[in-house]
Image (cartoon, rainbow, N blue to C red):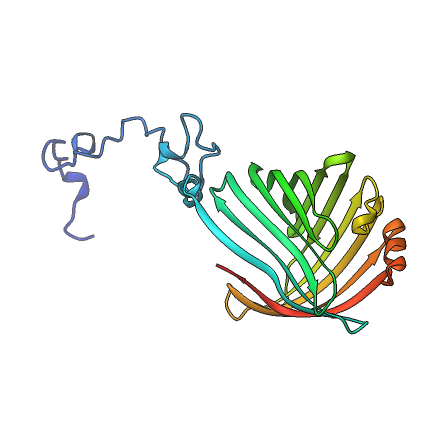
Length: 278
């Protein structure tokens, strides 16, 4: 540019106005970066048990903070009424209560039905200690008591409960009782969200017994199986009325006992009720 002779200018000494970054407080570019800083956008791979755990980075995930804080919940999955094709009405329930931490819990489960008027009833209650063995699976140990029509039965219980791929919930529980009695209970269910509030839930259940129990109308082997299809509308996450249909079939000696008592080997029923938790 005219009037600006860059070649003639004498460079100023480094001490006259030049910024010395190395000597500025807090800007020591020659220092080694802190090894505690994780790469941007990443979390440490450790679960917090070694020297480079979450605390080393000042990270405390919500679930880690809550692991040792006890909590409680009551969930009634089914609480309502059913009517089978023979015109018989029944009250039915299925629910659980738990208290404890994310790792160890006391879990109480119960399910059953009671027919109106002079009909029969059947039900059971289980008290189990649940121990988390993986993020998605619990090991359970405890006791079960059967009640309703016929003599009461007591069992020791042990099993697993958790979630399979595709969010299928599974329960598999083995039972051992007096006089050499053994049993196995299997249950699987899946919640399919049709909308943000409308949920369709298919549920499969099967019961197997090691020996016959004529007093309770139970035969050895595969005793019974059922499929229920429920559709619920979540007014809130805690409260949802439902309607549905269930199909139940008895097998083997259990079916023979039912026929001898004047009951059918299979049954279809419609159901309605509410699901709630708090």
